[in-house]
Image (tube, rainbow, N blue to C red):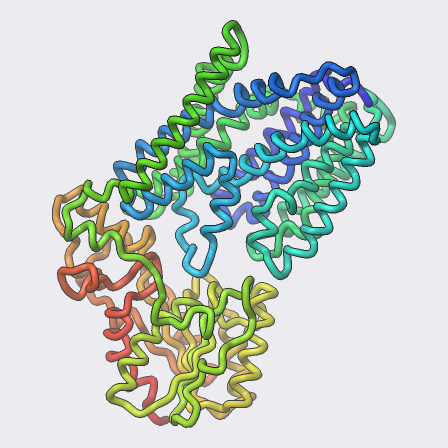
Length: 615
């Protein structure tokens, strides 16, 4: 093994690439759809550096486990403590009680090195608010911290048993990679967050540190660095958040990072990655990573309209400035200098205090006493989907792919075949109420986050193909398509054409419901905090523009489908309905896009006759 104590500036440059990719992905997801692989680069670097340090001392017989943990605490805790404390303080001012309570849980988990586990357990049908969790990004730190706890002990034990450290790392890495391959398809959330399925990326760095005899120069350095950069670039260009990950795809950024780490003598590593700007960003990459996401979340939460590209760029600049200040004024003084044992104890005490503060936030229900009872009740509305037949006819495809027999009202005609995502599931309470005064049956085949589209993500594509076959066999009188259509609704045209070919049904497409950018409950609390009054019954603040109806109508009616505007039923020139009365139960939306039962009943009462109208 080479001398890992030698400082390699190109590693800091590689850190700069990693953090920049993640930050740009979060700030401009459509422009940098694969930027999330920056985290994988971080994992490989961490495994490489930490293993090199530990293995050198273990082989020399003077590895100090307590000292190692103390150094890790002085490296990780200072910036993390500041960011966690600031996030809790700002959240008290601007977050809904329920969201603030969840922030408290996330803060406790982050202080306990288990943010990834907490976020994995939170994921589910209605986790559409993930982009509003200020500590969402700390899942990766949780995996690294768990690696730091386990790996030194494993290396010490392997050395005492006389095991080959390289082989041990390789076997553990291969086992982790195999488990990742096995779980990514059937259990993608677990595969993404569990340390045992992401550890192979850190072990890849460990294998490099233990098995590669480093040379400062060599004729193959340029080739390896270029190949590594190409693999990383391909990952950024080809991947997005719809592809199953990590799975086999993680091999590209992992191998790319290994190749670049092994080529310090390459021209690009010596003159680009080792340049002062790149090294400078790399040195503050950790606090930059910690700060950027809470800043993006909170600025988006406070601003009444969507963040512009310029504003997002300014936020990134602010994050860099705060990262520099954190590094110079907090990290460096604590990591180095005198009194390190006292500093370490203080950092541990500070982390305990953060955990205690998080527990207080949780036990106080997010300090819901900040709001008057009426606003508190409205702001506490949750998307529970109790009437949507979750798990039976509204599926989470990562957990289940078979619909229940009860999804069809057998023997009732005409049959309305409801097909879409969870926003279509939210129509069911309104359809059930309409059945009380009209004779028709309902067949519900909905899947969370799956727009009716034959060319969508693999799991949705497979499910939609199954639903199409069910529709063809059932041949209902009406197929009602509805979803959170987003920016691209071209795929529904393929569904309409297939239904026209395979059934005799009338195809009715219900256009998008109003989208509350921050979620309607959040709009209510912000309005109250700013004006000390309840939000008007109709509002244009924070709601999306109705740009989709016209192009959807034109596209779908050409194909023989009928288009009904949900917007026209819920909005007018004064704005979109926020509530149908003064109480919490009268709210029209429980989050960003899901209608409440009252709004579902109102919408279906308005459009059901059009849905059932004979051609």
